[in-house]
Length: 168
Image 1 (cartoon, rainbow, N blue to C red):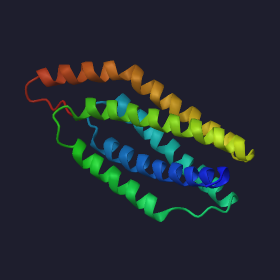
Image 2: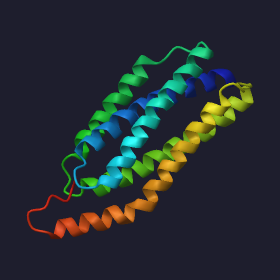
Image 3: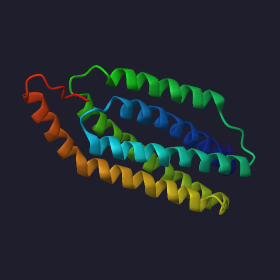
Image 4: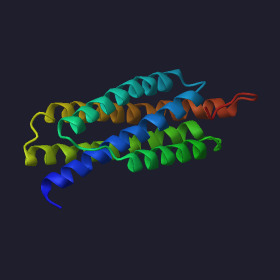
């Protein structure tokens, strides 16, 4: 594979990754009842993710790159499995916030690499979009890490109260 082929493959991967993120975020947001700040930030990031998918589709189309239906389908199945697995733990909200932070760090690493590849192959038209996506992923990761202590404290308080659902 040459540099351009790697870059195109990584663009397909990024598209599939964002489709997975969209599914996971929507699933998590739909289950959050008692943590309004976290739910609001996740809903904001769902909108960002949808726009990121559009930006990636524009890059794919501009570069005449076919989308990977298989990768998109596999990513959606993985997201579904993760959302099902997250429904049962009694500390779902805390584990969800931590998992969200880890996923954001993965996305940051992927977009950092993708940005380098775009520069290497000379796809200057795509660089601003990739930089925008990277900045949004960093903002979400920063927000999550700053709010994990608050979410954890709220969870612990709720878990001590009789008759109160703490996990979501």
